[in-house]
Length: 195
View 1 (cartoon, rainbow, N blue to C red):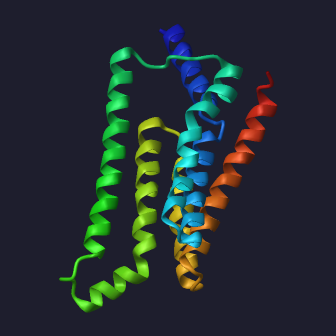
View 2: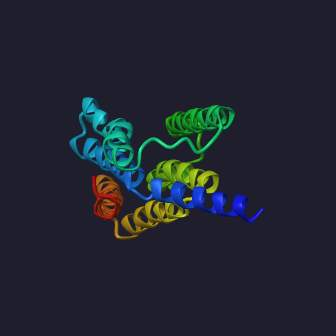
């Protein structure tokens, strides 16, 4: 019995080490930073900047984490399919909320007071999308650091609104802070697990 418990504890420790590389923090941070840059440039084609972090996630994970720790299959094939379905549904849910929010904000039938509130706090609502995704991911994976990222997103946006910064500024600050956290975790991971 204790052999099974030790094996489970070892598996959990390896799982947590595998996800302490900061790559997810970096990917989310770069995506938010790219979105802020796109907002600041106000040119539609620059929205591609918002996808850079997400596009880089898998190649970075492969080049940095897997090259140091090897590929580890933590779950059964059925559990992996379940996780893939979860990620797909989470992504579709966030996209649906995003497009629903955009459609709602463009509606002409909103009461004037409510429309004013939405215009003032629209970035808080948009920031809630990655914050909710990070919170759900933290809950599913047990990587509690992602809760801190979610709180930082909401907190920095609230501070930006309170200080009356331009929206692109506090979006870029949010992305920059998360990117720096990701870079710091990644640097620590690379030092701890050299090739």
